[in-house]
Length: 258
Ligand code: 6PG
Image (cartoon, rainbow, N blue to C red):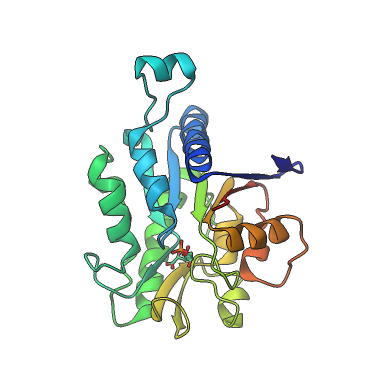
């Protein structure tokens, strides 16, 4: 493990890193519930989190003894609220939907109340309207509970992020200066012809992510592990993921060396 005071870097096999990340997420959930009565978790999209979400649904064995007895600690799902970091402009049941991927690998397996799940309405034709809608959803959640003022930003307990080969994260892509320079909005609509899949998306903005208590990058693949390490050590400063620097939070990198 490599770390400074507010950032930590873990690397290993997919099994090791997935179990470590799940143990961290569950521990953070209980810490948040104990501290302020709830855990607000932002889910990432793409394919890498599939194994993470499946393992999160299974909980974690706290130690060897618990493991030998099959005892597991599960997330405090009744005290957990779920959001997304970004979403493609497709229907909620589409194979490219980040919500659908989470539904398949996690939401369908755990007792999180449906009223605690806040999907991004990215399928709407009017992306800006959809972005404003989701931002209102976030504002009503956080302002009601954290007595934030209008110009504050959401304070998510944990934001899970992936990493693209080009250093994008959420749907903040290197070629989209306007989205990367956003300083007020919490959610924006972007059009990404070079993304996989290409097209319109909704994404949290840098300030919305950077006010989180914790950010967790989860990446799979040797190339991404190399890029992750360069971003972590500030050798690489020019990609969107390099701009994830929590204002009052910590950053954890879990990178799987394939
Ligand atoms: C998305 C994701 C995106 C993803 C990276 C990595 O909607 O595509 O949010 O930021 O995390 O592109 O994707 P993989 O995990 O599939 O490599």
